[in-house]
Image 1 (cartoon, rainbow, N blue to C red):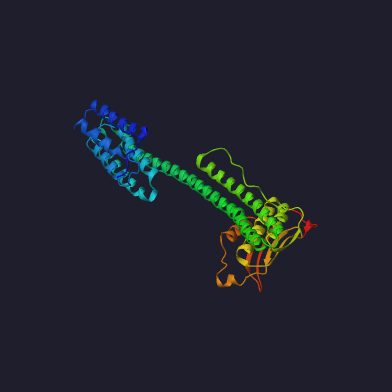
Image 2 (cartoon, rainbow, N blue to C red):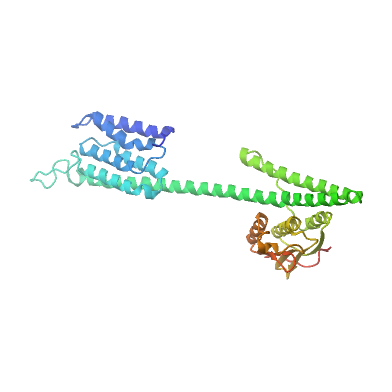
Length: 393
């Protein structure tokens, strides 16, 4: 069975129900023992103490209250027993698992109120259908039954609304955490993954020329040092963000936002490893979001060239068309046909790029050509202007 609640409020409800039932029946002219009245009222409200009460306890609660009134016990806090139990159950369970049981419990309570000997209508035959204390003003059993059913329904509706609100808030929090994890994984993949690919290429080039061209090997090693430092800085920032998420510490530094100004340096790092890369950069005023997405496409495209293509040459193009569209293309002369055979399947990098581009309303295409592989992203530039050549290398 479910664990007992540790909060003080449900226990207070039970205590009030017990003391109130004892007090109201001790001073009333009831035919049954007062202890039985207290027992029935406590059992009726007992579900509030359960952490996850099952739906059927509402029928049991309604039965106890119905028997309470049928035996002629005095009215009092027992009126709140089934509404309180309904609130506790509706707070813990979806409506489909408790509404039917609540209806059964409410019917039993209403029947018990109507059959209560202390409130039943009396007939005297001489002064109309109701005797002393009866009549519309004296006989309140039907109105009490109606009010009890309405109170039960209201408590269930309020608890269901609160439960739905809490579930929606928890879902938003889970979605935010999931989105943040995906974003961090994408940043690590784009930054550290690219850095490791460049380092591997530079190390291979350095080993290849170490004996015959020490100066070239030195340049490769310097590039490895710079790339490893940048990748390590990015890794530290991401770990700091993880620590911030886990401990609630102060805000950690975010990763730098790259744009068009960083593309030439990115291409130069790849060139120093021996891959011939041409760059065409023709864009004017472009929104920052589009610049970041374009940089990510170029970075991931060159990383894939280094890791998978076995290419000797790559072409990078960033061109704005009529000021309304930015087209980013990365093309190589490597083993593009391997995509067809399944060796170069789209991985996390392409999925992440596609998400970035589509979030801006654009499209991304990736596939083999007659020779090599092409990655093409089209990003709309709503409200921006583009023009003039920014650079050509």
